[in-house]
Length: 162
Image 1 (cartoon, rainbow, N blue to C red):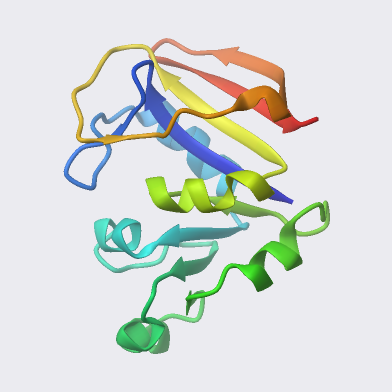
Image 2 (image 1 turned 90 degrees about the vertical axis):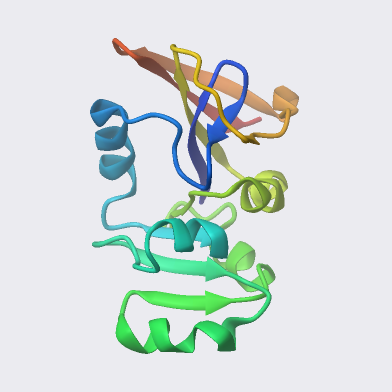
């Protein structure tokens, strides 16, 4: 099962200078709880924004055009692998409820996996923040909203493929 998870403002901001444009502990806790002990995939820029360290207690796939360039990091951590082809990943996880993969960004990685996604979990930040990275406009006609959960500074929408 492929799940896209991200936080955005109402205007679609997802980042600023390759970081989140906000710091909301409760939203980070939601992300941590959702992805804990799960497999995740991110792009090279997202990995760089984490100081080239994989997220703990998750298996980290990093999508890059040059996996060999990052071999030193792969040798350093046992929960990390660099890949340059998403087809085997999609085949392993798509429509498979026994295997969960969370797509955690960045923007291009979300776009790559959108057509294969089984679910979308997005946090909408209530306050407007300035940023330089925007999520692409999504065609949610292929998805159905199944829940919305409200918090002080954000709300979470959960969507499943129809």
